Image (cartoon, rainbow, N blue to C red; front, side, top):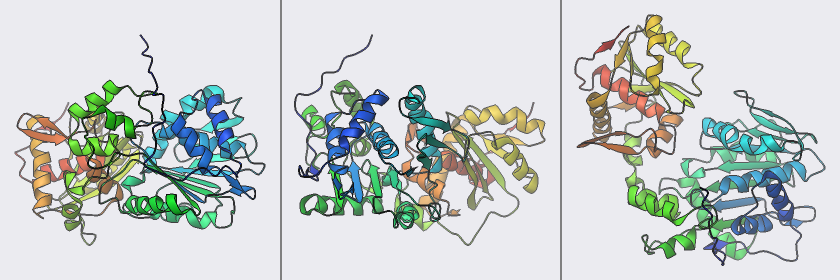
Length: 464
């Protein structure tokens, strides 16, 4: 049975927003038409954003920068896609459009899992020439020559080509401005270029986002070349009152039912509920491992030494996998890549290079690799059940007590920042399914350090 939601009769007003200038024409109308063509008509909040953000002045966007922060699951994906399609279809000159997420793997998942199902059935009406899904070549190409491509999150990945629209998503995860810096130089020669920055709120460690929020709030009242939109609840609002939810969730009653929010309130930690559903900045202390604790064990001058143990983990949906190495004192992520097609060969290569056993959780997705690895001569060590729980606790203890050295790695940083835990009787383990980020680098590191000598009992070696 399909549930029919009843939208509120009044618009969920943003707490901060750049006002509409009625003297200017807007391309927001075309963005709305494109959204209808996609089969996803814009909700009032989305229409408000595009009407203002796509105002035109002297034949170019009036705003060079657009910042949108809204609670999770409120329709940000459709908003971004409508804006990108408007840019691809609404300009006489072919446009180069880049999309980025917190990691390259997250960007690829957005294209393959969220965009392709919407775009593929409507290729003709949206003038799409082809959609490429190959690893490293993901893009949407249009008959007029425009392209939507993915941007790798590195400091120089946007250099060398002009960019007309840069769409940077989930900037709460950014610990620096590398994504902005990757695209800004390529936009300097494009007077009609526009950069969008979208995200749910982060923590006090989300330095880049927090600076943008502060500047955006100011810009929303004084004008300029930045358009800013924020839907959030005040810190002193009653988080259990549905009226609070309705005041800051613009999709509530449109695509989200109140019962879903009620369930989230009952199951999520308060800090995560505030951040994800009320769009409130929380503190980094709500991380399992705080930013200060994590920074204290970073050591780029060291590396694991023989003998080492490899840890291997695979995401539940097999969208990514990671390999880490440890000598019992130092941990280094050796590989963190999208997909799993590369994994067996790379794990075998590393295991042979160091003569190292490979630790994995046989009950998780990595367990499906056990036969292939052992058939190729790799020693596989099971870390499951109570051992896995103890491994997670040991990793935490060694970090917070400065008993471990971590070779810096951006994917591991992101995994630690976004990891959540699941209760296991009187202890806990990393939660692969509920974490908002890919935590395979963290799980692989945990397994490697445990078996390498962080207090693990004599491991049971798996063999067929």
